[in-house]
Length: 105
Image (tube, rainbow, N blue to C red; front, side, top):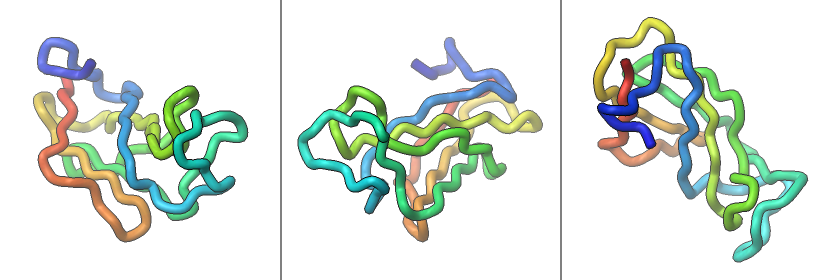
């Protein structure tokens, strides 16, 4: 778990989980466990950490979890300040709730 005592290194990869990715390809099945081929959002996925664009290495269903959970593997920007940094996930024109952070060291 990411926190002040277990902060992510600059340039490392963090895994974020969420819901609300919209339509997926292939379509996901409500109530089912995610299996291959893993559904991915049809709309573009963008993430910023500390106001900087973060590379999204994977955005799609979380293997073995219930359909509707999205897993994002994201690289923390290298030139980012240490401490709690705000995270914004955008899928299409929709943004995540405010108040999300990742601790960086």
